[in-house]
Length: 246
Ligand SMILES: [Zn+2]
Image (tube, rainbow, N blue to C red; front, side, top):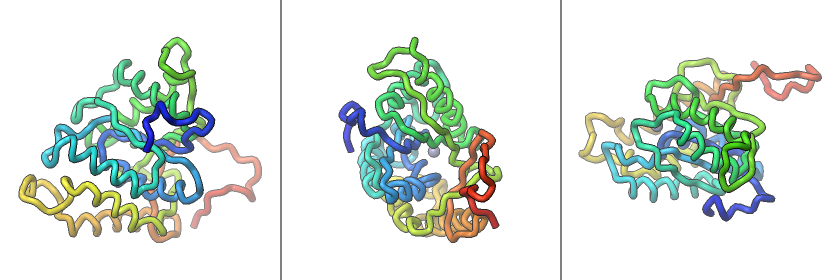
């Protein structure tokens, strides 16, 4: 992984996933990032917090684990901002911090968490990320790179009880996605700290595979990840609609 500043401008990121916490992406869209990387696309992850408020592990533990998960997901770049874990807020200062990264990476597509969620950090990241994408295109907010807006924003909706707009087939990548999640040993390995609060390691595989199976079934594949897009699609030729349905 390179620092953002080292990324050549001529070779921007294709897909950037933005999430509140280290290990969110591994659960909601890690299979999709693997699939995009397998297609030759350049993928990246921006986590907004560093995990200092977690019951288990330190921020340093999570940084090491996040780097290993990034390697397993085949992403080109990963970094974490310094927003406070547990109280992510949609402020102008935070929008500018994210916009500065967007302008450097210049991703064609941005994945955000769905804008309604049980955990406030997840919900706020959905709206904060959207507004940062908008702000990144406005000239008067100066950062070290020129204004830019992504072509498309999609929302990873795994945590939300909503009907997805589309599913990405992650069947060939489900085991690798699981390996990336398990890279967070400080969170998911069985241990005394928080044992009444956390799901046992053996159950995580069953739960995450069952969720992926549920969403896969909606689209007629084995394992899938769900996404919502806000915009209505424009169709030119009904015979060329790319999304299959059953
Ligand atoms: Zn989270």
